[in-house]
Image 1 (tube, rainbow, N blue to C red):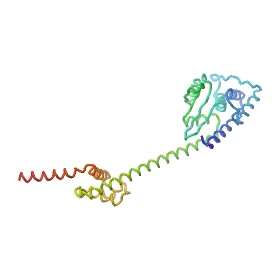
Image 2 (image 1 turned 135 degrees about the horizontal axis):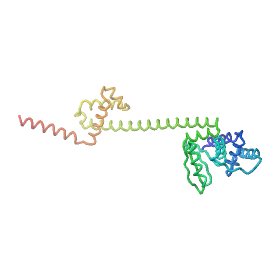
Image 3 (image 1 turned 120 degrees about the vertical axis):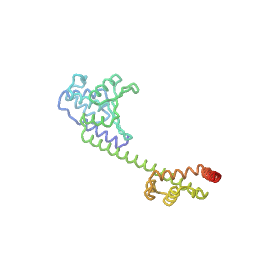
Image 4 (image 1 turned 90 degrees about the vertical axis):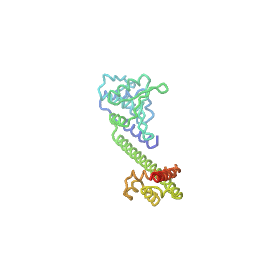
Length: 273
């Protein structure tokens, strides 16, 4: 993850750690969420843990009763859980949020989040349970739910910029590939035209084929649509003429066979007369 992304995630965590729950039950729930993690990894989170413990006048967190807790307490618990055991990654233009908990905690946590409309997957990694979101939309909903404000707006803005940049890069790559194919095709067609003309076989082709060959040599950079418009032909007619030219180079006996069939037909006509 880039330095700017790490700074952003740190700022987001700091914003969450600055939230002061008004209800005593919310403070207890957030304290329960912070328990068992490593809040000391960020100064703001460590101060939050100390502040909540002092306001509760006790150092040992009360186990959190998720089924009996109201929604606001659940949100406070999840905020504490994210601060102590959650991680957010924005690397490679992808949003990835995960909770690393005890192996036995992972299935019920994933089920609870799914029941809240935030479907999560879980797995075991090096003996720990990992509950994961890889959906930018779901991560955004969760962060909004636990209280992020300006940081979430910045995250959404970053995602929009990255999405636009990705779409632009894909469009440029596709256009570049199309241009390369068009240049390669024009080079093949001009080489084929030169060969047929040197062999005297181009003059034997239909008027449309000769007309398209002349236009292609005059403007190698033109697209099929541009050639068709200039020659007052359909695009498919231009394409067939150019395909015919390349086919003739790959099948040099085609002209000889056609001439033989014409001469044989003329001979049979004369004999019948």
